[in-house]
Length: 462
Image (cartoon, rainbow, N blue to C red; front, side, top):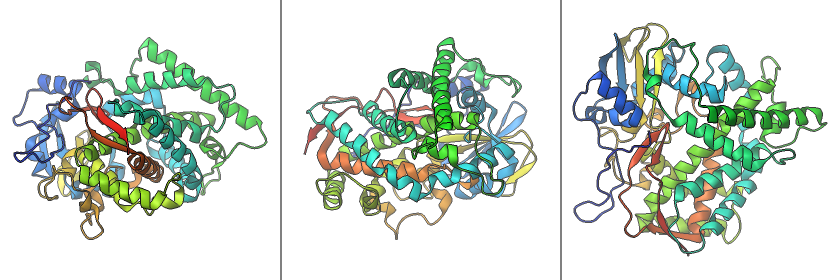
């Protein structure tokens, strides 16, 4: 899945910057070729008409696949008929061996119980105390990049966001080998992102996906470390004020029940996998866009200096960084961290009146939704001001960087606070530009949407 899609040129006829994009599929393919394309890069199967129409339906192994790119169709699946759909067996087979039955993979009563119990941990008043941790991580990233160089940006952003989630989850690491656990997590994230041909086979849903021996060892290292932390906190009189402490103390408001140790362990892995990686990718895309549009970068730097001064970003600054947020929203519109997700109908239902049979699959193409020619002016262009109050979309389901409906990302507030603090700090203190002689950026989907082969930018202090 590391193989990338061909990207369009990043300069127009007049030399204006045009962000990298995928080349959509312009003709139907047979089943075998579709499977091969899915394995190499799932975005490669998106048909060109899906950027102009809102739903396309075709046959697949005796069922129908509904490619969806319209707000109304998204709402029908994610909200109106929410209980008629489950996450696809394919993504479940890829995620569950690593994430277990956590909030990202659970369904039914297990999901409802975890969602209701976890929700209080992500209230703004619970998140604001984590802002200094985010500011510290941003400052460390600045120091790492301060020497003029051409670094690989995605790895730097990933390290910075990992430092945040590590400190937010574990305020202390007694009995915790950070390097060993970090290495284990990297192996597990790689395991999640690697699609195999066997994953596409129509096997029974109960059949587990076999992990590689390396991933199995990594899972054991990670689980033992987290379980040790949970046991130590359970035995202590005070569980702590970090996120792990909150997970140990939150209760379902309806039942008064807390999370089991297994729930907490799998939630920690889910927050690491879904939290730090997606935020690091969003920051990388934002810096890529700003590096290629100096006027927008200068405007963001001016805002950051006016709001932050020379000091660290704090929770109260986040709401004042308006343009910084616009840039992040535009980056996630052009490059949604999860560009496509799949759902399977567990009973007969419909999508905006179109009949759907039990077993049918819906591919929700957020990438196409965010670049739809009928929904956006200049859909492939970088325009942060489209997020001004009088221009931003009025339909909640036109922008789904964090999903929608009851299963929308529970950590959206955390992610936006972290990304805003980091982007403002980075651009205040550093100047980003395209790396001389670097190849055109290409897109690759490995569960998340990333720049293939990393992202190299020229960086120097301001």
